[in-house]
Length: 285
Length: 219
Image 1 (tube, rainbow over the protein chains, first blue to last red):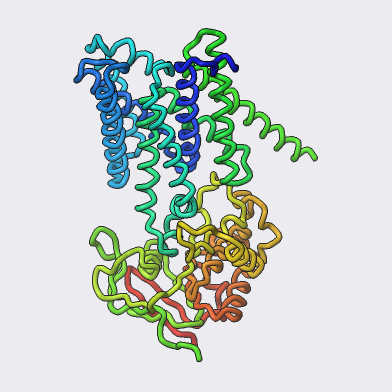
Image 2: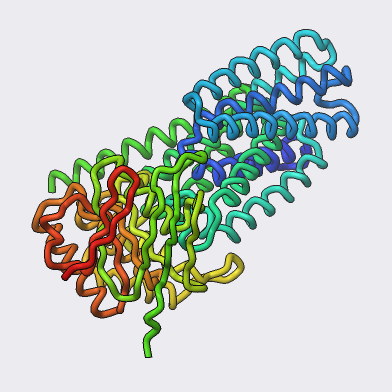
């Protein structure tokens, strides 16, 4: 493992950047699962990837283009993510059709748009394809700094508004009787989800983002006795899965993203099995 | 000296959704330390009236006036809460104690004490550490009542608290509400379908029928 950190900036940035992304995803993922927004977690990273692909196509560059191109790509990711999120939330509020209809349509359109935009942009083809595959080796120092700020910012917001987010999510009507407007906290939560997805997709690709939004949170919510421990377990599982997956991918010469997600899936499976065995043992005794 | 002025007054109030009135011309007063039930068939408008009293629905016509700073404790139907949340009965009760806690302050001993006292008052202390989703219907109802009490209310509004519980549990809950009213001077307004169970326990009955509200005071 130490060889991965020894001197090679490429690996160091990939590991630290990837860790930042999966930690952010594991925190936001708890609320994504609790609020039953998992399908949104599938569609939004794809919309974000389409935004990045669109910027690469417009500028005629790839992921390793100039810093300006990179900033444009991040802007494209943010605009596409928040645009799609706004459409989905507005559609849900109108309630004229089931929420999953809009999510399904968004996923199909975004996936097709991403592939087409990559296909017609020869400069962005290779790098966008590796982003979609979950290669993590193109994380620069600027991305790393941005991720660091985002991690601190998201963790701080989650900590500061932990009570209000829980109140508004668990029982919005009761929250209103306590003088909290659940709409404000819904906006905050959706803003955090959108921001993490946009930033995560730019750094690690949609597969890693979706995988780590869902799998560590699912495992944590099975095992945790309380909400605080759910956040802690989710973050710990995400970190372990990522570091373990990265090491396996390095040794086996496989793309890092899918291997990390596979390790997270194994962790989820083991936790699920352990919890079932515990329930059986309790029932038997 | 206690203040006998109404906690909440409706004067010719209409409540409804998307501009269409479901409850029309409701005029009533919520007084301190009274036990009132809201009766009516399904779709009659009693939940709409309750939502109007809670302030969730602004009046489409008429007026609603409340005592400044009125503290309302709300007990929803227990099925409305998601069992996915990993919260113990104590965690759920503590939510009520967060009413006066701004986001920048750490919650502490006061909130824990409020939650613990409320659980004890509702005879729910024995299962405080159990997961809320794994409790029986009657136990969950006690926890939701404790959560409302932890918010230190003057008025308790309950939406069908005895729905789906056996008669013995129902009697226990109604006895408990009576005790809480006596001990804390609470005003309690409760939606129910079970007329027989509340006989002799209430000060007034509010009947809602086809959107019209009629208040009958006990003799």
